[in-house]
Length: 115
Image (cartoon, rainbow, N blue to C red; front, side, top):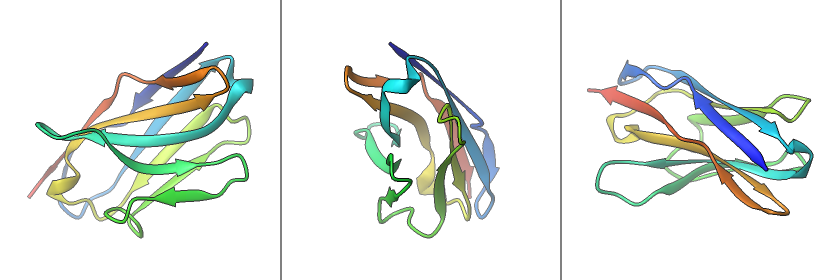
């Protein structure tokens, strides 16, 4: 089993930056891809960014060029650098680990962007 714990959410003004962190523990050797998702009030959870075993990354069009996903060498810390934040980025952000035994989600961290 894998545990994912997000941190770093905060209240920030539009145009500001935040870095979210996601700590993975447990059977991390089974982790393949890790992705960040977000869910705004009254909206469905949506994909934001993902990083894959090769190190390649994928972004939703709404954040491409502003957000950057990364990981450490130990593959137990994952980050989402968010720049030029907009009010529409306000949401609870979740990280998800994909493993050969299924997907594991964190509890989420709140990001609020004021205009």
